[in-house]
Image 1 (cartoon, rainbow, N blue to C red):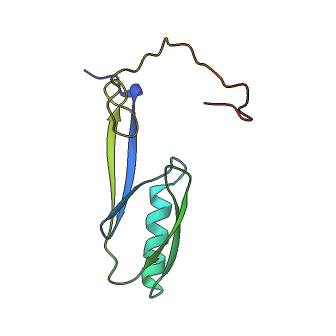
Image 2 (image 1 turned 90 degrees about the horizontal axis):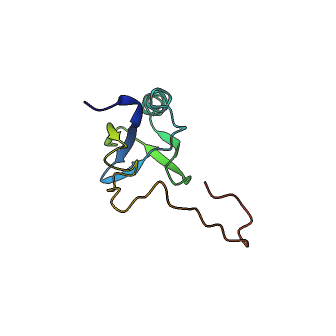
Image 3 (image 1 turned 60 degrees about the vertical axis):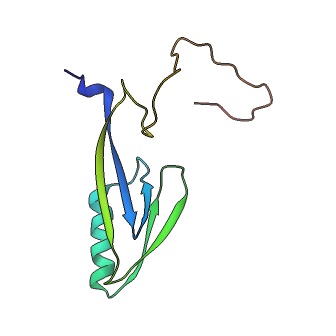
Length: 105
């Protein structure tokens, strides 16, 4: 049995035929409410932050096809981005470049 504390819910939004991973700070209930509000207003833009930090504006119209999906990712078997963790070594030392002007997380 999997330990649920080592899993996360990965939220995705598909607009037309393009799928974006939502940023962790996006709240699905607020996003749904914004989409419905623009639809009821006859159309308008909804701003969304995707996982890489990019902000996108999606035009919502009565003919828009939008799907929001959630997938549980078990971190023991795969990374949050869905890729295999093959070769991952949590005990490997972290090497910092002295020229990096920011912290690497």
